[in-house]
Length: 401
Image (cartoon, rainbow, N blue to C red; front, side, top):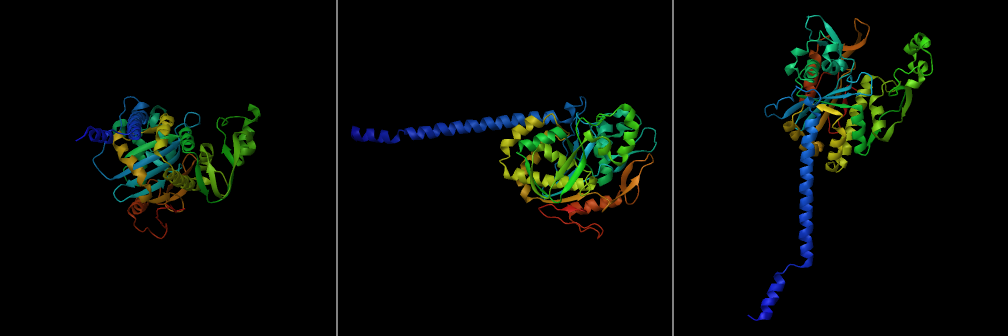
């Protein structure tokens, strides 16, 4: 073989400048992906360890990893946080039941005025509204007769799960609580949410943060008379404590601040009260789900973790969390049924011995059998009784609306 031929073969085997660039770019891309995955995993572990209960209450522990299973029940709570009165009173309480095998989920909203019974050391009868459970559990010294020692492992959150279980009729595996600031930040990081408002409503008594005790220019001596006026019209007595919200029917783009007002408002004539507010909260969660599906959500996860780690508390173990995260890519496959416990289905209004407005089962105080049956039917897809119609579909209509 001639030298020319050999040199020609060598030239053919020598990589071109273009192929070198491709390989370099490929290596850089691979390195970038590797770094991103590593950063994500590190962030993920840091995030989960930060939001788990022991971070806030030293000496407690995360709920142990349960045996392998495919159904999970998670209590979702929203609370004001440090800038609000009643810091840990839960403004929102929902129970999410997920079946990973059947690709089914049920979301149940529990009104904050639901009246529940607490275990006591003395054996005396003690009830409170369900929205106070978390706060009572976190600060037991304020309620010395409440038997927090009866709660499993004395872990903050377990008592709340236990008492909510009395109402819904099945065990609560874990809880996840987020404060108002965390809610607003999450919505803003997602770029806002487009919500289809079903009816126009005006709320002239939406509370202004930090103004809860403002006298609005009046004197202390005027307070007794103002409080009498406030029983009929709080906005008239203390105008600076409230702002007027107007939401018009149709699709509206909401940032975090606006979204929080939408899901918290409950004083309008057209769409007020806890039952309508709970329906709006479920409607909003559907809009969040739609937005997550539209986004390249992976790019949002790390900013979310950075911003929310001081605003979320949970007892979900890291191992369990890794099971839920992959399911976010399969949301479209799930059929979601939604229920608002209300006086249209299982509850009725009543007045407590100390004069509070409360909600109890239509069967009577502390009798939850009909609720248990209704929720079992909801989860299993069994046709309920004619008194409370149920519809389920991927678009998640509301049950008992």
